[in-house]
Length: 117
Length: 114
Image 1: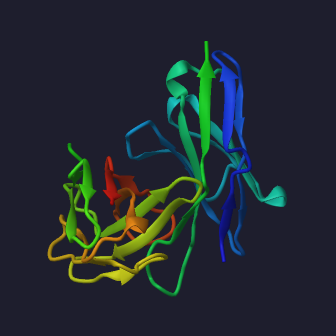
Image 2: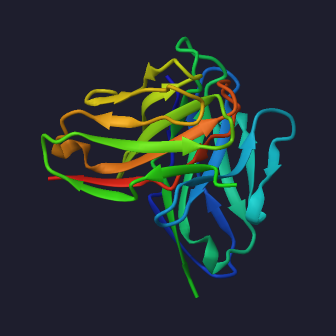
């Protein structure tokens, strides 16, 4: 069964500092990988996704993520954090196929980002 | 465009009462989903629908039912609410059902069962 681990429950960074949020996944085949962001009181919004090809993917709001198959990781990065980036971030893996015939997406438990001035 | 709307925004419900959470999308997406979000557990799938007229059970379906009479609407019903159903509920949709589809989320309904 697929699984997603986000080892950091909470991270605090200073505004302008760089950011890396960790994500490890477990999936037997080539995974479809996603990062979503959830602002307080809001639903989830897609930041970026990886399906194949270039292992470094660019997303919205200046975020990028790198797929490393050997490490089963898909870490999210941003070179300079803004106060508006304070939110909760979810890594997710989508199955390429499942017997139920639906899009099964497994979400990590999330990393809450606090940005201090 | 509105995307996905959910109603109500929040609700306090007495245990044993029934309630329907409403979800409507205007993107003509084929697939729709209901998740619950609980602290430390991430999002868990309750029910899904691949297309109008079909529904299926997700990871945590007990105590919930859904219907999909048309493409746009996907209501979630709690027949007899229990305190363990206190959660934030998110409706989502995707154009297709393959694993690489982006899911679009509504703003959520915060439900408290007392």
